[in-house]
Length: 134
Length: 422
Image (tube, helix red, strand yellow):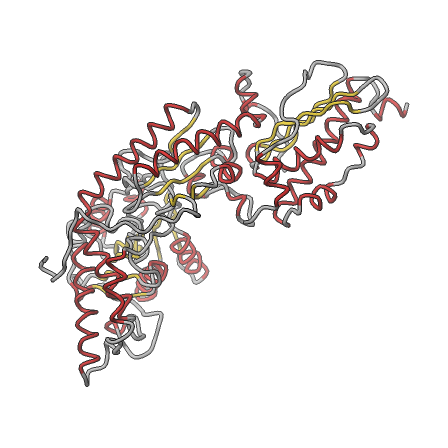
């Protein structure tokens, strides 16, 4: 299968590879997927005092499309508020990377990873949605 | 000149012209380039010697028939058979279909059971599935972690209702060699026909249908540097194996496979067999050297890599390796200078990894990290050196991106983590 130029670019030059300290209270970590399914994404965000995502890092086990999807979302979430980052849709990722239908699940996983990282941050900061609702 | 009237020179297999703009080809189990000597031998049979080998009335037919019969003898010779026991087909898929379905259908009133193995090629498994729908029962034998069947399990599986036992000679994904002589002896003792899909075995290991008690054997042209679109089926005459044909028509190939023979393809398959037979011993030694260097080179530079399938009972031109914590399709993208296959099925519509690797007891995670390397007649030392450097670079890059590798480095057992399957 031929990959799009954008997928190849992210695969060969992945942005924001690495890890943040998961014990840091300002860091939210999302770990989604399963090795048995051939995809695991770890996405971490570091959130500033005024609620802006100031840094993001990823590591991904998976095919080129999975690596590209997670690399792309680290670029997208930086500088966004948590709410803005939570609005990122898998369809936006798939469209940007021109993913073929069999690779849509990679973009779904990347969206899940953002949501999981945000949820982890909120839980740690004691600001998760359920607590806020009370 | 050999007894079959061939010029062969085992030490001077010509090299195909190396193309600078394509990856190094390490997928010889998928297909092989046609040997230039084979192509050369085929050419006259397309043009000036175009006769129908079944035409009995003129020289065009006679010379084509003679060429086809020489090819038949060459195919027979590499497996220790008689030329009368070889029929030409379109390839090993057709041969496997005809052997299993043909024998099953012939015996269906007396015997309704088939024994095969879970790691067989899809064309064997799918043929068996269809026969199940038509009332046959099929036993799919498991394999051990090394990919080999347990002879005691085979013996227990064969009953007086077993029409045919089908076990491949060499596996296409992991290159392991099944104990054909022992299987043949068991089948003969129990009165079941023994069919072996030897598409990956012919020309790679010595085969003798009589010593091994093989009753039917499938052969492929394009796996042994012959043309695509032709294969053969060996069908034993003493004691005679009978089968119901699948293709009806003019009664060619002793009524078992109608249709005009493709003279150039038959000539190509015949010469491909003769060349492989003449060069097998030296070629095996050379390929074993390449394999040893490839595996050693990778093991020296990369931790946590695992060979899939038995290393002793294996053809020299195959390696199948799991690169733990690196997903196979991602790895294939990283080694784009190499043409290889992955056991990860992310490339196909299903997301299931290789059923062969799963049958070895590999978990899905390890099956997803595997690559198959196949090398052969035109592989060189330089190809292997290039492959080692290329693979090491790609695996190290991908491990630096892998959350699983990071967890492993931190001492976390990845298999103990509760993953959300998706």
